[in-house]
Image (cartoon, rainbow, N blue to C red; front, side, top):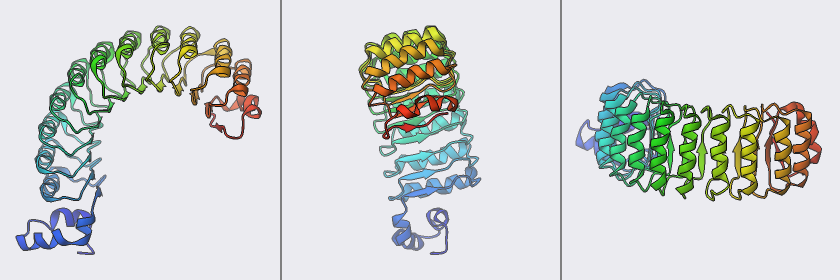
Length: 367
C-alpha cells in the first residue's frame, strides 16, 4: 500500500471486501490524510462516484480539491450523496467543472443535511439563475457554510434576487463571491435589499457585473444600514462619477467598511473629488483601490492634502489615473506627513518624485 497514490488508497482500495476495508481503515497514511488535491485529473462522473463512496466512510479528510475534472451533474449527485453522511470535510473545491443547475441542485440538497462543510467553491460551473435559486434555498436551512464562491456562473438579476432573499435569514455566511456574473443594476438592487438586514456577511465581491451608477446607489444605501460588511469589491462596474458620488456620501457615515475596490470604473475628476471628500470624514477605511480611472492632477492635489491628516488609510492604489508630475508632487508632499500609509501605487515614471520622502518602513509598490 505504501506505493499506492492517495486517490487509490482512499477510493479504489475500499469496498473490495470488509476485511480489506478494515486494513485500509487502520493504515497510517489513510488515517493521516486530511487534504486531497486532484486537480486536474479528468476524474469525470464515474470516478467521482468512487470519491463520494469514500466520503461516506472517511473521518479524516477536511479538504478536497477537484478543479478541472470534467465532473457533470451526475458526478455532482454522487458527491452530494457522500456529503449527506460526511461529518469531517470542511472545504470542497469544484472549480471549472460542468455541474450546471442540476448539479447545483444536488449539492444544495446535501447542504441542508451536511453540518461540516464551511467552504464551497463553484467557480465557473454554469449554474445560472436556477442553480443559484437552489443554493439560496439551501442557505435558508444551512448553519455552517462560511464561504461561497459563485464567480462566473451566468447568474442574472433573478438568481441574485434569490441569493439576496437568503442573505436576510442566513447568519453564518461571511464571504460571498459573485464576480463576473450578469446581475446588472436590478440584481444589485435586490442584493442591496438583502444587505440591509444581513448581520454576518463581511466580504462581498461584485466585480464585473455591470451594475452602473444606479446599482452603486442601491449598494450605498444598503451600506447605510449594514453594520457587518468590511470588504466590498466593485471592480469594473461602470459606476462612473454619479456612482462614485453615492459611495462617497456613504463613506462619510459608514464605520465598518475597511476595503473598497473601485478599479476600472470610468471615474473622472468629479467622481474622484467626491471620494476624496468622503475620505476626509471617514475614519475606518484602510484600503482603497482606484486604479485605471481618470482622477487627474487637481484631485490628486486635494488627495495629497487629505493624506497629511488621514490616520487610517494604509493601502492606496492610484495607478493609471492621468496623474502627471504636478499631481504626483502634491501626493508626495502629503506622504511626507503621513505615518500610516504603507502601500502606495503610482505609475513608475513618478516614483522619483516621492521616493525620497518615504520613511524606510514604507512598502513601495508602483505599477
